Length: 103
Image (cartoon, rainbow, N blue to C red):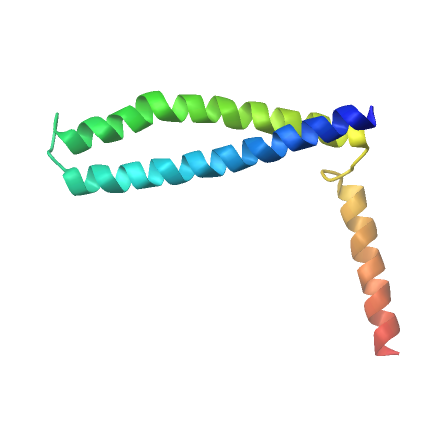
């Protein structure tokens, strides 16, 4: 179970990296499209339309799969990253530590 969690975590990490890279490429593509211009049917319009209609759906599917793998990884490893109880316990501990340092 732990080995599966490690593998899923690595896949998730690479998925996040890939998605950040893909987002950067999209931003660069839109900047290039803005520079090219061309109005309706021009080179810039065609590039921006390609990014919107063909590129983004693929990237969104990859992001969705990556998030799903990340959630499975957290579940298999026993992490409680999405739990409000864990956040409350950490906050209570920090408050107690701050009170101790003031006294």
